[in-house]
Image 1: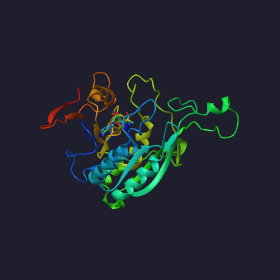
Image 2: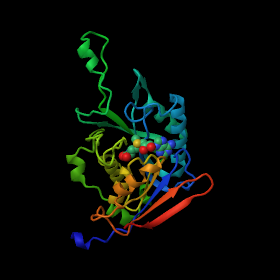
Image 3: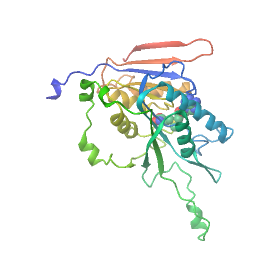
Image 4: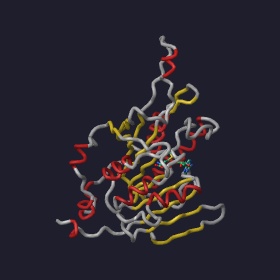
Length: 297
Ligand SMILES: C[S@@+](CC[C@H](N)C(=O)[O-])C[C@H]1O[C@@H](n2cnc3c(N)ncnc32)[C@H](O)[C@@H]1O
């Protein structure tokens, strides 16, 4: 079929909720088809220094979010959690193990773990390996970490017969990219976002490639993808590009304009995207919700 004969994809809707993802009262049970996210890593040097008073408080936040993700995710669907153990003041915190246990406690099946490898020149890490150069003797070894995990959890089992044939046909995966870019491995080599990238400055954003692979592999056109730690809105942007709806939850109101820009709401950024897509910001307040909604300009 020629490109111009392809049926036009229906417009998508993108909702940004400003508040904490430890509770998601706006979202009904089983109302999203995929969750892709990367939480703040416990007190990560550079990005989240001293954000949490201690490790148990970080785990309380993570557990509450995971419980809500389980509730709002449709049966059979995937929760992809990009996370990693964190070295703080010489102590490595076992976040991957703790998050895996919490997801299983919430009811998820632990389906797989992808390791994301960043290029060797990656600079947003503690460079502790240099200690050995100053002290070239045993016991001084601390490796520079260029790996992160992408944990894949599933809510029960997927009913393959439930997929709508027309939407399934539109969601066909490019097997050439799958082979050439080695998506089939449990090791994904992806370049990270540079720390001084203008839009993602001071936000530990993941590269678009991460949600692009996960959304392509685990959702259909027209599905709704949730990111409970929206940050700069990378997941929302890629969901839109791939004709999926999105919901982002972000605690920092100052990121609204960054997210609008990234999702392609500002003038000049939407030339490749469907102009009928809509964007909505839900600003939580103590007593009431104020809602702004409008078509993409
Ligand atoms: C690692 S960043 C996410 C970056 C995102 N993946 C991107 O590509 O831009 C984590 C984000 O979670 C936000 N955050 C922290 N605690 C939160 C909470 N309880 N609820 C919602 N967002 C939270 C932070 O403000 C930060 O923007």
